[in-house]
View 1 (cartoon, one colour):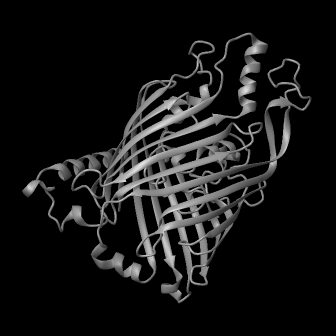
View 2: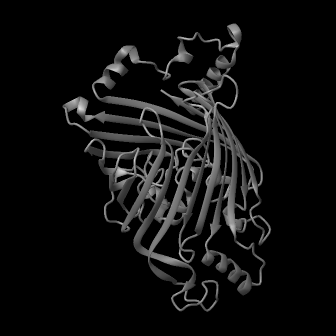
View 3: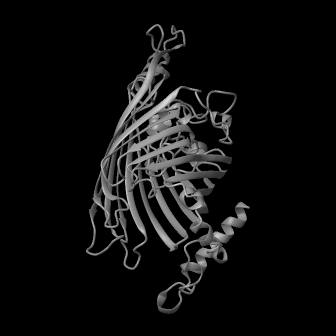
Length: 461
């Protein structure tokens, strides 16, 4: 199946770039490369269903990524994500105003480059996860008071579109995972928190219109894959355990102020957000034991001291920086995200992301997107101190843990409305936060900086 999909994508690419009259693609303007989805309107059935309130979609994302330089080893990998969604507009279906039911399922394939070859924290692909089929989102939403009040309940995730810690100019532009659900959350929260590939039972309430000052709050199950035998992702591999109350609860709140409202009032071009999260469970200290000794001390009892809760704060600024006159879709935009958490119980205590994107940089390519972004993740004080303690007590030189960073350059080429090709380049600095490379690397040597090259194909069926 993977081979067939890759061959099919390659054939479509070469058909798309064959020159036709006046240098245009060989496909006719009203043919395959002009329709919005690969499978078209199903003989009118897709529009009929959507008009009735049933919106069914499928999307395939495939990555080919390679690290020719650096990391633990050099390799090339394939990974794929088939996403199937069903959105039911209950106002159209059963005359229930403002009500929606949404479901989303994944088929994940391949092996991740970060997991298998680089050993870094800021995962190089936002579709990297253990292979398998799983249910993700499955929720009911009710909007009231002319969309001034929105209640969502069911299986939900932090990184759902336009939810928490979300940047409109970051999430859908870049391939590295930290520009979606930030790695300060997926690294510090139990089992990675309710971010891809996990959604968990929860409730979200939003007060205020999307184009005005609004406040969102949510309560999630605290651990999407509580401790069990084997890899924690296997514990809830199908996404149908609907865990409630295991691992405590995760609470989030976010205040958002949109400005530069779009002319059609569908959203904003710029916004500022301030948010925070709180988790009441016990979190181990990353340096000290219950006697106050370093965990690297031979006299330590080996039992980490306990911190009764965890928390973090973040802020986001999205800004449309410049648009050509009378250009609705073109323009230069930027984003900045800053998040922090206590350094004694979290591997990452600070993450700063920033980037620029430009829609329509090249002539006659208004739908294409060019992007550059960087992320810096600082290793927490306790983890840094423990690395120094290990060197002190063992007498073996160790890398001084400090930070991990990534720089990404990317370009989204819209071959057709339903097909995007995205060549991508990433530079990974201090993989693992400057941690020791595994054997058979020389003792005490850090994982080398890595260069990642790849291409992504995204097809909407």
